[in-house]
Image (cartoon, rainbow, N blue to C red; front, side, top):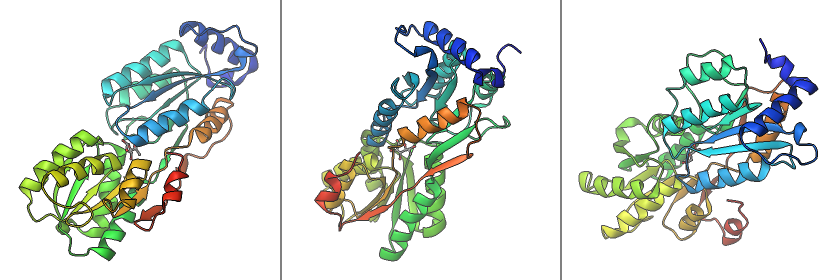
Length: 321
Ligand code: GYE
């Protein structure tokens, strides 16, 4: 085959591929050493949350020409079909490496097979895939979502064992939703969760889902939101209903973006499990290794911590996201 995975790692082949990729995406080229750049197509799933914005900033700050990368970045606006189209465009451009953060877990079989046939290595970022394609990616970097759900559950079990829980789920079918729900439910017990609805990881949908939940389950007194943004939307709905967030209704969230931690400091959130989005530098390292044909770990887990209301303003101000 013309483009073998191994030929790609040869200097001459790599140079030829980069020049082609630059020409294909209309890159300005011309700069010294452009031919050494690794062309990367990055399909981001959207801009739905503070976490995502911080993740995108980190990716763009790290995947730079100074760091040896020619980046084509495409935002799919939380639509899988947009993402599939972007991935096919990357194949057509013949990029050196494809990186992407899949909006949901399933539905990738065909395009992953196409990428595999084109012998373009995949660095899977943040969320996970569920596919029948064998060896669909070279490496994955992201958080342990199940553990995040468990950590949220442990705090609830210890501090509010009798709570009537409403679960504000992330985008249904996404790795972050599926695993957080599983981890949380395993710890708190399904019988304590009186209702569930998705807020699609956004503030606006978190608000409307909470409005409906407050009507449907008048005795709910704890919300586990799969991210801060939905929790912030829930605060608005709770206050509009004349209740006090953090007191009448306990709020537990995941992410730990600045707005979320501020709500925790202000007493409106009660417990936050971190999910750190700032790992662009690690993505670069993985891309370089994968491109060079070096061995890489199948998984890189970004480590998280937890916060309660004892968090200080200094801690919040010092955060990167
Ligand atoms: O928690 C949420 C975002 O996949 C870890 O996606 C990510 C999640 C994150 O929308 O805020």
